[in-house]
Length: 467
Image (cartoon, rainbow, N blue to C red):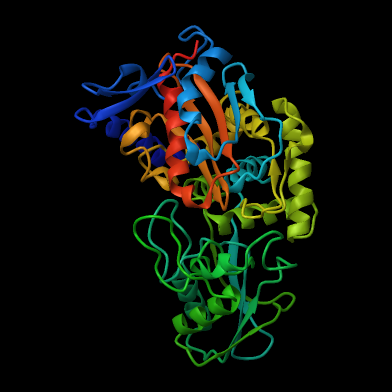
């Protein structure tokens, strides 16, 4: 099965390395002995661009030291855009031992780096072959059909762009229904989104998240993640969301069934209803990859609710909090972190009530690259590649981050006052490091420049021997 969902990511890594090779005429920002210098990049370092991220072994590279890492980061940490407080955790992924940790055991607001924890929990609690099913069944009255949501936020309609992984399509579901009803008129479309319950917006969320396109109200049924128009081709995939994705999905199905005038309302599927058609999401490993690469808030919330269901909890924000704590407690203990070091109120990291110790995330990342690699590989393959895809596509293209293009894989995070970056990087000597940089006192005016500052820190790790 793995070959089916890692092929695209293998291509991503190769293309990202090519970006570095293509940068031979630019200037590289190099940090050495605490001094920042701009040097011509006549040819990229072969140690950085040739070997895959996980190729380093203890015999190939010396262990990094706290002094070496501190020296590499010192200049970048002086950047005023970081606001004067950065929680740092850098681990040797080979040994799982901390190299440099400053405030790593403090609890911070993680923003979207929390999705790393959600991803690990999903791959731990959910079957790898689980697919989320959207189905249509016959209603109780003639002319009634019931659209039943299974939590697939990737279900595609007119406002989804093709991409990886291939999503189920509402049009295909409608075709199955048309064939099943054999021309019988559709008078009413009933939407059943009862799989999920509780508040539609998470605790600590801003109501503006919906209107700004960051997330849709959390429902078990939606098409195009509730978007009302196509997202832009470049930049974050934000587009306004409808306040009721389930009813909007019902109206879309009615149009596809040739019954745009049909009544659309909420209800429940009858017991033992006649099935008319169903479509399935990609399997959980692919959903995890997509969630991390795109920082997909809707998908993160749906995966979190599936975790709650799997652990016997209500599919609500409250149930998610309990289920995530239970699943992650076991994983964190195995990784050498405190069980309560990740406390999430949602799956996406949008909540300002979320609290995480940066040292906990690096220990999860070290597990992903080490002892739990077989099970957690989609976390590694889903992390955006610097300068190439996902939320790092437009970063590491120039300036201080350029030398680390294709070498850093990391999850971004950003909320008002918080900029974070957590992932994996291979040093100049071939040692694999897990890192988390969380700046939680960022001035609002420095929201973008703080991203560049964190990219500079990750690039400094890639460029150093750190010994």
